[in-house]
Length: 240
Image 1: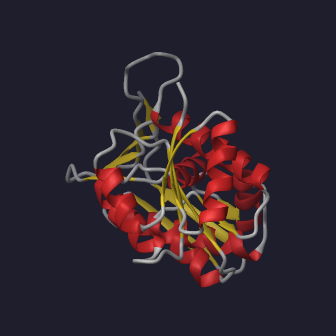
Image 2 (image 1 turned 30 degrees about the horizontal axis):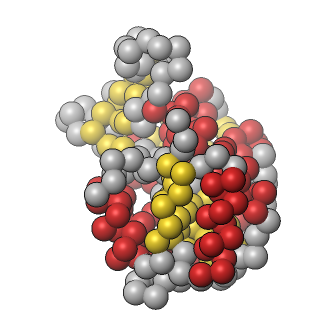
């Protein structure tokens, strides 16, 4: 079965070239030229494996479109395309939950590779590849972590969805719990890069997870000034 992509791009020449190349590489592509058109199509479509959203659109921007879509489906994978190479825009995209942020002009083969990697990550995160239908649960203090479902369940039974990168980071933190973790080690181990942009991205993810850990009485994330973080839990996690 072909992977389903929603491509939102208002530039006719670029849109046509990218759509044709994606289809040549085996994807099924729905191409929209406005945010409203994309929003309506998304609402009436059963499933998209990935959304490719241009930030600058004629009616309203891609960030607003992504926020609207995330309210419908918190687990939707998406990336942004933009001609603006500003750090504040990248951080805004990541705060919304984007899996990637690609600046124009870009290499089409690199785009294909990033698309495939994102889809692979999402499938591994929400699908039990072994065929076992049981839901794997890990107890982190008084929190239940369902990695495959991208879910956290708190003591008050509140259920919160995570992005794949947040889930990946949380798993790494808990596997190295109660010890100092250097920022550069986290970046290199998880994402293979230790630069300014990835460092700021890590701060965004840590801030989000720290806020979520505020619902727990047994788990916290503390800063170690100039070094990194400690993921504290006063109860050993166990998996079922």
